Amino acid sequence: MNQRIAMIFLTLTLASASACAALGRQDFDQGLALFNQGRFAAAIPYFEQATHDHPNSAQAYLYLGRAHLSQSNWRAAIQPLRTAFRLAPTESQGEIVNLIIDAGFAAALSDFRLGDRIGAPLQLKEIL
Image (cartoon, rainbow, N blue to C red):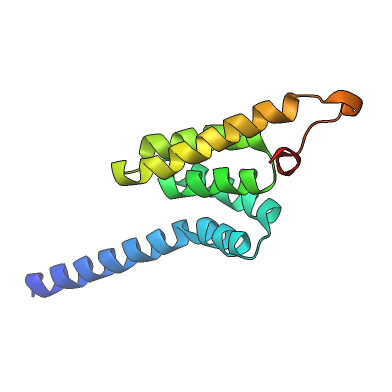
């Protein structure tokens, strides 16, 4: 009888833990759905919430940085990408380094002013 109660308790505990884990990913999943639809600005708050709820999620920080990059928010992208790099497995860090470098260069290039466009920030696509 005690063994049966213990099994029921274990089953309920595991089911509860699984439900909590699924609920905890809800913000990230909603952000990812928006990101995949190209709605990057709308995805950012969901990724931000996911990083607050799960501060060790490299994936949440990576997509937050990528959403900022997609909005040309170069400087805003750098910190979440750096955090993603720190949290990511070694095999994923190379891709993240490339994104950090791209964001840094784009931020620097946007500060340059050219000839008759003095005062107007450059768009990366205009330079390339």
